[in-house]
Length: 186
Image (cartoon, rainbow, N blue to C red; front, side):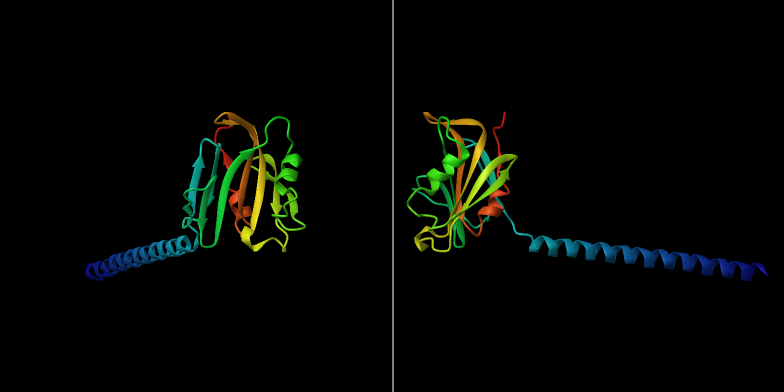
């Protein structure tokens, strides 16, 4: 083989290697771009949530971002076109979780004639979820309740409470409840 043929073959190999590198680089760029687009599309599908923290009540939770605070409410309340939540505290002295549930359900039938009470765990704590029966008064807007024993009693104003009380519409209460954390556990 002559030196000029050998040089021509070497030049072709260099060009093929360069062409291979360019093709490989192009594939990597296209793949990275597609991965970026896929991630953006996936993030667009993921619901955006707002974060609510109340240090007086010692809790944090996530809720739909389009909900807004309701002024003039007795309790901290947020509301949107598709639901709501309110927070409070209760249970002084030696009240137990079942006592709190009985008091919340009461005789007023605000959860309908046959509400369902479910056992839950919220941030490692025992809790009871009160779900309304189908005959609940429509004026209650599907209100359900969650009662959770605080890790330790909290003092709000002059009173000390043993339980966190959470109300929300039945469509959202379990999702929001699963996000509840206690912030002042000490």
